Length: 63
Image 1 (cartoon, rainbow, N blue to C red):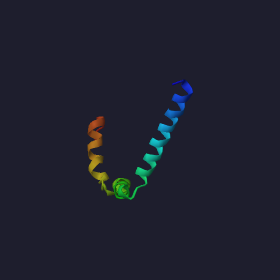
Image 2 (cartoon, rainbow, N blue to C red):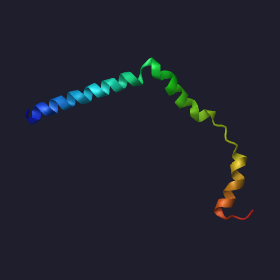
Image 3 (cartoon, rainbow, N blue to C red):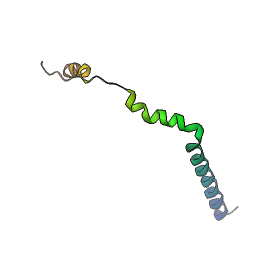
């Protein structure tokens, strides 16, 4: 097997992997999981006043 044949097979292998990844990412089975991950940032309800009081303790600032 010469270098050109190896390069051709390697490129074909990478194209097959790429197409399989695209099909996996856009499959209907994955849609729900990806939607949950995308919206998870909005689910965390952080109370900013809770964290303001502890920030001065770490910096050594006087109240």
